[in-house]
Length: 257
Image (cartoon, rainbow, N blue to C red; front, side, top):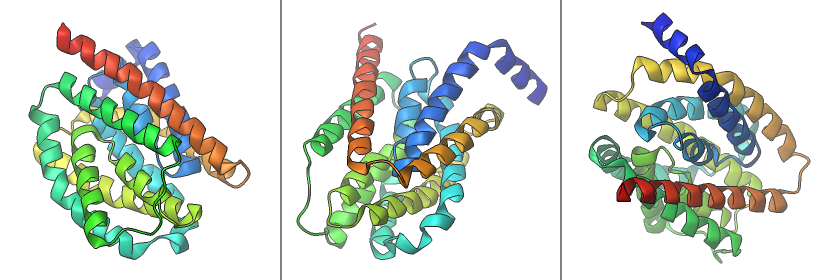
């Protein structure tokens, strides 16, 4: 069975090459900023592969990326805020996974694209909070992330907006987002396994995409120390915005077909 899947991947080398390129570019962003990998990779790869076939493999790659980065950011993690975020995430995850398994793909694609567009525009306009939100708002952010992560494998935007709009230092925000992803993607994988959507193909895709991920994360993490963070973050948001527009067009076309 494994040989058959590997042979199938080899027979579709243009698809493997294109998807690996998307993984590599998204991994550079992930290594630098601590976020954006799932959103970039799933939005790009979903243009030529079903979302449900992509999400489990992306979760595995997210865990691998976080494990690779955790040792260097351990001391900057906001553990108190992380606990409230994870509580909300657990609440929102199950409904999100249910939507992934049973909801039609086109409406989900449209909903995700609209959310990304709105989030990107808000962050590009320089949205900032005067003080760090309390437990209730932090938990609500976690719920939103759980819903999106379960449904699309892209629960990052609410948490990214949360941390990068608060007075917390950029290093603290980046470290906390990375730690959050490690926790949530591990929980997400467990939930997907219980739902039966993790297949042998998921593991084969993970292995095929892993080299592109590791190289991209290495390049991005090195760049974090030297590049202008504000300019790079704006570039990432513009990429997310453009990909979301493409996804919105794709979802709208499927819905009208």
